[in-house]
Length: 316
Length: 69
Image (tube, rainbow over all chains, first blue to last red; front, side, top):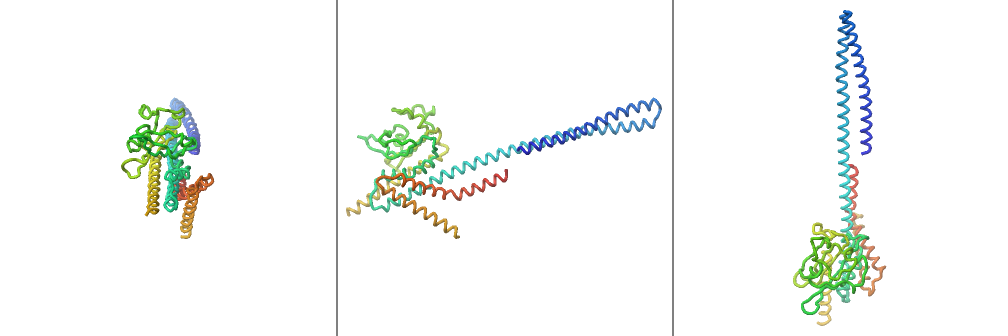
């Protein structure tokens, strides 16, 4: 780009000096023409016809030359300038295309990085499942889920696109029956940017909040921005904490089902402090949460079937 | 062919190391941070090996873009 500008300036200078030369030539031609006209006048009064013819011919040739020379210099300079401007525009356009290509490459590289971490997390879950399946002792389902989250902590946060500056949470809630028909969600395992005691984690009644709504409707709920004016007071919390508005902007709740129908086992909730992190249009991060909910469901089913098999084996 | 065999062996090694590290964590009553760090290191290596062929393709595309520019 800089080279092209320098070339443009050099060319302009070159053409300028050529134009100056032509200009001088034209001035000389005009002076010579004026002298020629004076000679014609004198020769006419002195009655020298031969001199008059020669001077007239010279004046005619010089006039035609100066007209064409002027036109040639200005047109050439103007065309050269236009050509260079077009070249500069094309260079700028190609630079812009190169930058776009680089941005696309960077986006692909980041996506590769993110998905490779998720693939590693899936490999880890597979290893855990193998261990549970072949283990002689029976493991508690919550302990298995907790070990999955603990061991895959960094991979899962990277796969979810969380960064060092984000407040994020990934919480596994189990549905528990409280009294008659009421049910609520209790946090059984979690990953948080800022650790907190599990006993201090909020409980969600069926139909209350994003998690409670996902439980009541047995549906995935995505809220790109909890503070979006269009939401109104839909997900307003009755007991809001001071940092809630900063820490929880974007949220996704995925039902955890064991049989694909009937009552849910629980809900997996992921939150981010970045508005729009979880999006309806771009499911890059939502898909990771959904896959993790599927893994948790499989873990519960595996532990339960292992427990049932162990019991059947010990009581023939 | 030798390279392919070596690559398969390396992946298989990584898998068995991961299984072994996971077993230690799963059987532990209290999980030690060092055990978690070991698993995470193996996961990072798994992730790196998963993206290696794609990273190579991206690198070639980048080179080609620079050539065009």
